[in-house]
Length: 593
Image (cartoon, rainbow, N blue to C red; front, side, top):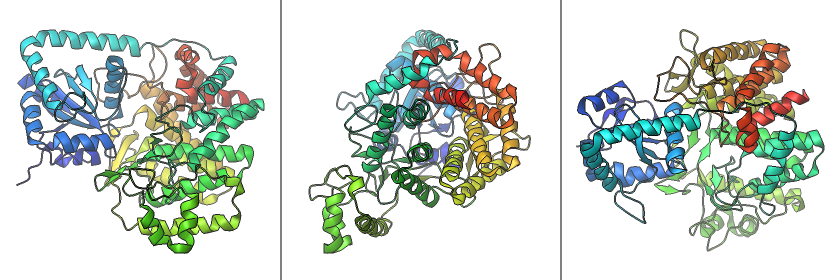
């Protein structure tokens, strides 16, 4: 008989993926922390998300295993955390991971004191020692032995680590950004630019929309052909590559190789929102029809596969189906020929890199890497699109990847902004209308009885006080929407949210905005979100939204608040502009409007 653990009553799709584990999981909360103190056991905190490939692997190998469960249940209070539902916990423990190991990733597994202070952590662990990776059973036994024999030392060490991390990661250098920072950022990007394949790293290669956005703005402001060329090469190479789904559209998470051929097949709402903005921006600046086409394809995917009936947008599509990464998206040569026949088949295989040997583990991930797009005649493009439609219909009959149907305020804010911005530039009222539907849904359903913004909506219920990214991303989206439709209610909501954001998140002593508000649960640290990675930081988007409000209203307090936030970590920005590029973009826009 299958038994269920304490996750059975949770709403998070990720936690529910673990409800049948023999591991006696707790959700994060008072009950788990209280039990750890009563039993004097360390915490084993495992953080992941429902579309995470390596989280699935560790679940299959370890958390579903009775032997692993016996060890974890005996020695620890095991806690499962959805990083998208609790980004505050993820932010804190990922900060520890970067400080203690120099890197991070998911699943993130933490051994912590009953108060939640980490003393050992890592990412993926197999069941037993394998390929120089220590197994979870081995580590758990060593940690237990250490706790039993040297608990006092462990507690002392955990306190020392916490003090060191707080000193290292919660101290910021003030400073004023000057004009030089734009040229420094531009030259830094040129220094890491891949001239052959586009992008700004070797492998894995992430889209990094902020790099492209900055280069487009810099090129327009300074008439810099070199900056524009870096942006355009990257935009074209990404679209031609296998990181774009040429059959069902939308961008995958990242490429595992340098030429954008084989992606990690996960699709995230925020990636597609941000890429929608930069392709629309590129179309505005260059007028090149390709960029408009990519925008249209991104939004066709989002509206078809990521939209809820209520009006919001879902979070993500899994990389896996049937337990195999990419299975839903790739084809054998024979499949393509069977679907398309002897007339269309050879033509499609020639242009989309379909071969009998395959380009991905014996299968084919369609791409246009070797094709000169400008040389394609309209008649040929029409035939290839016809082939893609036939393959799409065939693919739709497969077992679909899991869809995480959490509706996150933050990521919806980005998609609202993306649709509104693109709708304005492309003169497409349907995009603006779709942005309005999503904004109306968020404002109607993710606000509590006291008027406080909430972060997460699942199955008819909203919960968790909003984090900084929820406020700042939504303000950005609402301001783009107001600029596109002129309806005063969106401006009014943006102003109210901005006031609440400043009230609930401001650091009155050190400046800047905290990651979580004064309404939220108090954790072992109260960090600030400054680093712009795959997702913009809360502070950078707050600055951008406040400048938007200033431009629309002319009210000086918005510009002053934006500048004060930027000043509070301006020294960090000057020292590493590429790590804070959304703030640099916002600062650039503030000077040009």
